Amino acid sequence: MARLENKVALVSGGASGLGQAQCLVMAREGASVVVTDINLEGAQAVADEIKASGGNAIALHQDVTQEERWQEVIASVIEQYGKLDILVNNAGIGAGGNAEDCTLEDWRLVMSVNLDAVFLGTKHAIRAMKQTGGGSIINISSIMGLIGAAGSGAYNASKGGVKLLTKSSALYCANAGYGIRVNSVHPGYVYTPLVQRFFDGPDGEAAHQNLIDLHPIGRLGQPEDIANGVLYLASDESSFVTGSELVIDGGYTAQ
Image (cartoon, rainbow, N blue to C red; front, side, top):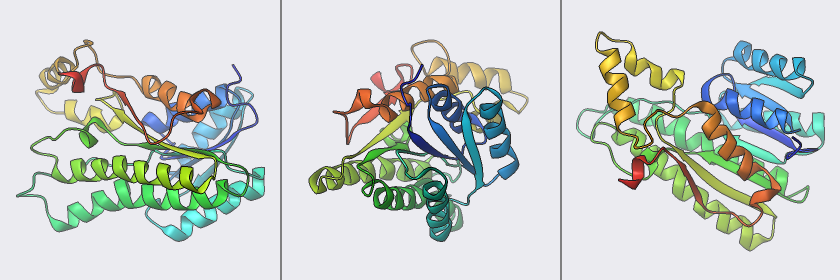
């Protein structure tokens, strides 16, 4: 229960869903966790839950699309803890549409949150981690970063970009001798607020079953399924893993 003992982890989008689960799992394994989100109240609730269980956590407000705020947040982490060992670029949105109907405004919004923000987090985490001997950067992509979906042009492009930015950054850090590993995680459909919106309409039950049927394992993912993969990549157990895609999708992309 101490796989991340003495490590400091920052999770963007940590107030709910995948990010919340990642924060709780890493705190359980001994990490000091910095929970950031544009929803500060939600981030604080997660930090309070960690502290109530005997862990160490703080919450910070963060708009991940703003470079200046990335600099401020990481500076706050260094001031509070003296280092940054783990960054999970988790914040993301599901929006946009197909290549014909997606507006340029929606396209740019999806890119700013899902890809630009991952670039900014990676950039400034590298600058911090190389000063203290290395670390692990984990970028949350998607199965939609590996395969296409007709109605998800912007989302596909953003998550595919995360995959290749991850590989480029991993090679850069390895070649520079920074001791920083960079990997991406590719979840299938996970039962989070982002996915639950698909079930809100009158055909919600059928939509739910249709999504389940896409996964040979016979269920949707749970946030903890993804958090456990993130935990592996954050820990020293994955010291020989960099530039890789960890696919956690219940067999979706095996078909």
